[in-house]
Image: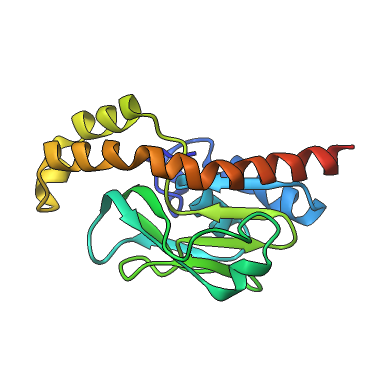
Amino acid sequence: MGGPQQAWDDGSAPWLADVKQLLRQAVEDGLPVFGICLGAQLLAEATGGRVAPSEDGPELGARLVGMRDVAAGDPVFWDLPMSPVVVQWHWDQVVDLPPGAVLLASSPRCVHQAFRVGECAWGIQFHVETPPAMVERWVLADTDGVVEAGLDPETVLARTVAELGEVEDVWRTVLERFAALALARAR
């Protein structure tokens, strides 16, 4: 899931190196992984990709991502709308995908929005699991950062909360497919 740590800086949290090692081992062993935001960044770093601060500043609030054609053949992304809405809240981004990774979604500000590493490890730079109270906590916790990004915190909050129903409608299926895949592999 997300967090304020920097995936590219193991010193930003004492547990990052261990999590990256677990992710690397999970991918090598073919265990299902679904990394969200910081989780995607850690997955990328763990498997040979690179994460860095976004040169264009943060991506915040409800935004559209564009599905790549290859997503139509993916086991969990296969029937998403071409431009689904997501919740963005990140200052860092995956700037280089791991070798052999499949790019599933992009946006103009962040090319690597969703990707798959191996057969069953996915990373999404955005959030799809956010209830309104969580978005409100993010805005309140980082009001200064939102303002520094040139955005109005109240507007970001209102617009994002207004899109959460659509986010859930689209992405629930992806998460259910992932859960079914993980359960099948566990058997």
